[in-house]
Image (cartoon, rainbow, N blue to C red; front, side, top):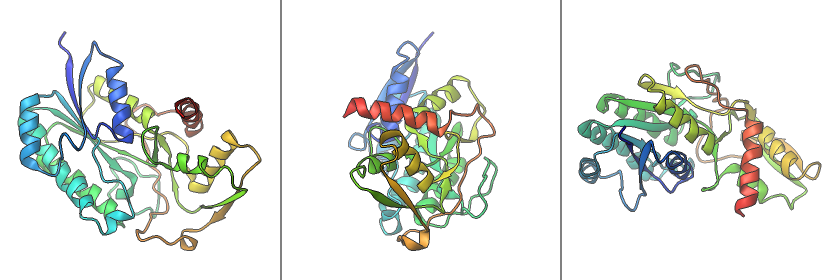
Length: 282
């Protein structure tokens, strides 16, 4: 049986590096082509098209993204990468006959109600969410064989994330953490393995929600982190979003419901494994 050729965009990012690792763990099944932004900038349609036609992948995984929510308010790169870039990838994937896996976010929702399933109607309230939702729409218009995967609050070994920030604060006696934004923290390695399973199961094309299970606030998540690494040594003070003003408006409750795939493990289990891996990589 011939191997499936997987092209991974944004391969050196937090999610991309775990996708590369996951698919390379099955060398008899997959051939992996990792592409960083330096090797292929998805903002340029002609470059994307020519590279895809040259590589002839069976599957394209787009983990390239502009993820700085604050900067997205004023930085045109967010639109160029998250929206136009997604369009370019969708068109090129269709042109070369490849399946496309693209990642989106809980921030496509306004956060007024929470408990969003795959059919819930997006209504973003900040530039980042708007650009990601535009990217989703482009993929549905210009793509053909695609999976749009929404996820939330990612953390992993190869990128800046909330868990690492909390670890860096363990020498303090107390921290102030927002308590009125609710979501599901998700470990990039768990997400990558769920993506491999989705592809291997040859699922119907469409939108999927893949997140670790366990809804919580940032303050709840911080307490969970400290309980694992410094029990009873850190006081977590709850503050509201209004007490910590930001340029980008944050949705209050963006809990994603996974109604179409086997549930991922709990946030607690995933965090324990991440902290173990983090300890052995530092």
